[in-house]
Length: 121
Image 1 (spheres, rainbow, N blue to C red):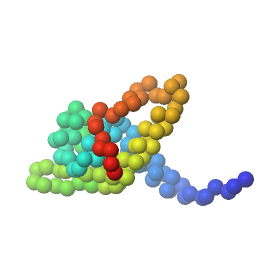
Image 2 (image 1 turned 120 degrees about the vertical axis):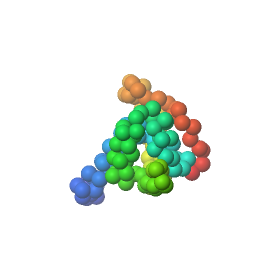
Image 3 (image 1 turned 90 degrees about the horizontal axis):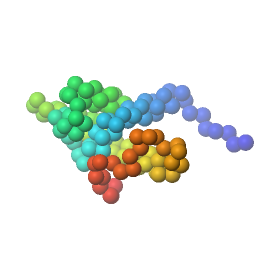
Image 4 (image 1 turned 90 degrees about the vertical axis):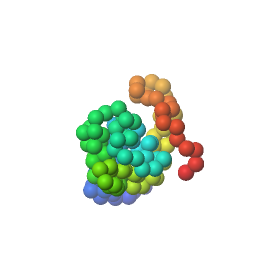
């Protein structure tokens, strides 16, 4: 039997925190929108169709998890992906869903994102 590498509990908890920070449809929509570059809170609010308070809470959670950076310009706050490679993780999630037997797919599974993604990385 092969011995598995020891991964410290703290690292596992931090990884879980990043994954949890993505675990909401509005936050996933925000990440996909930020693939194209930074966006102000007002644009993201329109995208997720929620009030500024709700969007700000989503953004703060994702920033604490290390997914986002922010830039203030006057009255506006702009967000961008801190590490765009998180999009590869989402590609991997899509691959899992593509290969999951239909009976095990979540009922809310949508095959294609409503936000058109660019094809090159």
